[in-house]
Length: 216
Image (cartoon, rainbow, N blue to C red; front, top):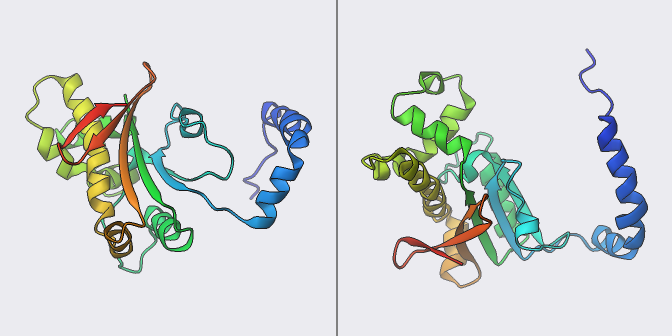
């Protein structure tokens, strides 16, 4: 059965445009990247949401960020059970092989994954409770965060609070990885959490000393 088909025409057109301009004007840089390998300064863990454009937000050059994207920018707890763990593998590679200096968890406004978790945990999305739901089982990671914000009465404020909890839960879970904890305690690695307001272009960063987010 043939499952792969040719790329959409608009993507092919864009590729040829990139190859003829950006690539052609920077051939030496691309050759350097290819020959020297990657040496990113930071790992970014962000949501799959197409509106979250972390390289643009931080003005990053190619090769500067090691980027991992998943639903709701979540990091699961350390669980060396012999199963397949994509996010944990990315964290392990970034910290132990690439030796990045920073890991930044980037959450954002109006996150669909977080909204799904909110609906599931409040009993309004029974389909996500099914064992067969990949999204539901992934969003189980955020249940501890839901428990901390479940009593907020306003729905909009509750969702915003849970979006920030997705960042905090991920930062907490990162510290359950022995190689992350060791690197942080030795001063070789720092962890950061930021929330992006897509509509306003704002960034808030988490201050672990106060337990609050503050505008950058």
